[in-house]
Image (cartoon, rainbow, N blue to C red):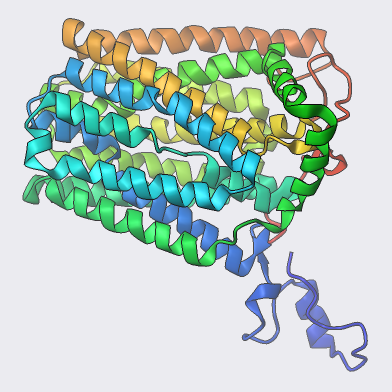
Length: 482
């Protein structure tokens, strides 16, 4: 919504200006950007956060899925790659939660992000050295150490905090810029890797990584305006004590709906790992594909992620948490089973299958992020604003992906890619049936409640007293700020 620019004392307001205000469009082109609100945030903050997501994912795309290509180029087999990918995603099981706790405990989100990303980027760049890549052990060591400084989830938590409860549905419009840059970067770097080798990937990774650090150091404030909640949190610490806060977090985690949600997050993380960590190996080694085709598969993902992220509120209103989860799992099963039917002569058909990965990821990520915010609101004074999103992403990205990489790499090496992908599709299909059955039972026997945590009620079916009043309104119109 565009804030009113005319003052109440101005009695000479023309009819044209009134109409312009009603249409929420500035009559004068040079209206102060600070007064404009776009996608739930003031214009300048909106541009800043979208730029951060774009640059972060663009730099990550230089490594990301291409890490398997790097390992393959230096003589590692699928089991070695699975071990490295598994270990490098297992380490953040601790580090992501640790940095989330540090950020919440000391109200130092910006400092935590700057330190961890600077150190992690510097260590990762050591992989370009011949001394490092000439040894499997040294590659593994450098990759593991870099993961001790991973603090993913803090940028998402910062964005959700800025948006607040009323505007959090606009999160997808920020996250889509990460998807856009991820797709663009993957396509470009696929072509570059084919023609110039892997070294340009490291250049792009380093330059964009440090550029992102500089931008955040200069333009992102130490705390957000909503971080005044910290005063209330300090009172809460004094009232409840450290053990009381930890007990609250533990009790939240063992609620039946929360346990179901976390289990499915892990399973989907493991399933997605077989694609994101090992698909390029399957394409290059089994289907004789070029790096360019590998990059194009990511670009196709993004084309179908973007509209879902942009119209997240519409999809949420139409399908709900359960429906989006079920759609995500269905697309995963169809896509991954389709991999097993491809041959070198039909390898380009993978682009059609990758359409469904965009739907899988976007639907799942939107729901996972939204439920993380719900869980934050179900804690007293919303104390765990960073730790909970970081922990959920840890279970998905670290624990689930680690499990999928280790088991998937082992299965690919011993039984082949076809068997591995058939098993992955079967496991997620079993989860799909479990969720569908639970969702139907929940609606039939518990007054139409969701099978997953929601804003309306706790697991016991009673109104959750910890929810802020504005959180109950899920009818935010995604187009109201345009």
